Image 1: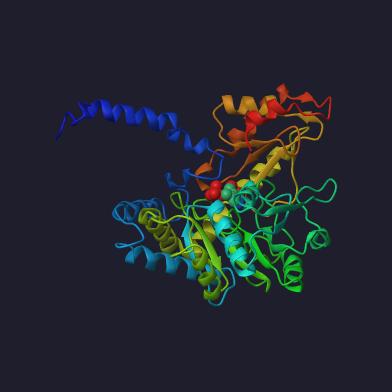
Image 2: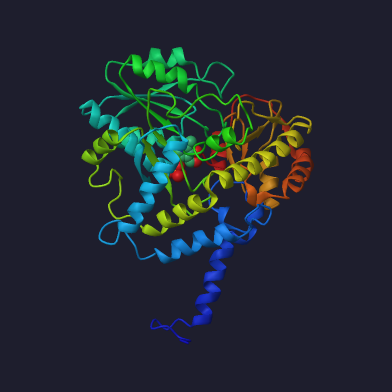
Amino acid sequence: MTTTYPSGVKRAEFEAELQRLEVVSRFPEMPANLFDEGPHLITTPNLPWGDDVREASIEAYRRFIHGETWITGGGAREMEAELIDWMGRLMGAANPAGFITAGGSESNMCAILTAKQLSGRKGGSVVFPDNGHYSLHKLCRMFDLDAVVVPAPDGHLDRVDPAAIEAAIREDTIAIIATAGTWAFGSVDPIAEIGEIAQRHGLYLHVDGAFGGYILPFLERGGYDASIPLWDFRVPGVHSISADLHKNGMAPPPAGSLTFRDADLLAAAKEICPPNGTMSGTRGAGPIAGAWAMAKLLGEEGYTAVSLQSMALRDELVVGAEAIEGVRVHPGSRINMTLIHSETLDLRPVAEELRVRGWMFAARAIPAPVGIVVVPMPHNFGRTEAFLNDLRDAMRLATPIETAVVELEKVSAYGF
Ligand SMILES: Cc1ncc(COP(=O)(O)O)c(C=O)c1O
């Protein structure tokens, strides 16, 4: 065995450095990671299949690690087609078509590039509610499109008024974007109503299901919440849906998907982004293989179990958090997205304290002054009570909200 590499670095030194970087990345602390992406591949012994699926996904990723989607892409392209077909049908399309992307941002970009291609326009505008993810603003800037952002009805950040969406449509509008599983409210936009509007105006409708796409179909099948509004291809006006495998699909990143209702739409995507429809040229086959293995082995039954497990954790958290004086969980979430905030107290010191105690989560300035975003997933099993205890304890640091003016430089330290 080599003990010294050609560069002069010793094997033991390299191993120590790799371990240090793992620790810096906080990999060993995964059960305390209440964020949405990345930690899915840790042990999940509480789930029926134990470690088998996780190991198989890692193995598939490893065996396809040399692969790209060109010369040696035959296998990856078959896996991609199988994944899109399976998921597209679960989302209500009879003949779905699409591709695997690097995640929600790329999927949203490819969808709107397709809408632009179909419109034949050089510029134009895109209408979406203000709960839309920042990747929507980003794509508008990248593609020289006006973002026409429709404000939420007063005091209801998780809601969308379809009449306001219709009123915002301009002569140069090329697409409407709605979200199923908003960041960070977890709400589902009124997509059936927006679909009718899109059809009436002959507009492309894209659904950003980056977060909700890999949980909503399974919650419906698992009977979790019969009142989830229709959001997928069963709504006739929907052209395309983003759904991230590296979020609720539990696959190793980067793995998103963009599914079109049919092959004609995929053909338009390929016209503007040849040869696959994706923004990137070479794509690694490893992530496609990892995601394919996950979907193939979990299937509908496995994903339903994962989704119900995530929601059980979320429900425990909601009940526990709402029992704490001054704490409120923002209403309107239909998925495992939980936004903890307060209408009377400034929770920024509480968020700081939770971070000091090792919890990983996102925090954002909306609703002001801070919303703590927690996304329970199966790897958090057994940690809810500990989180609630720390939250309860840290509440002694909360201060009354004295002014509605938020100190912006402090808020930006929380990201998003
Ligand atoms: C609703 C929504 N859309 C898009 C994205 C962007 O996804 P990605 O970071 O994988 O590009 C996210 C990420 O959290 C999201 O929540």
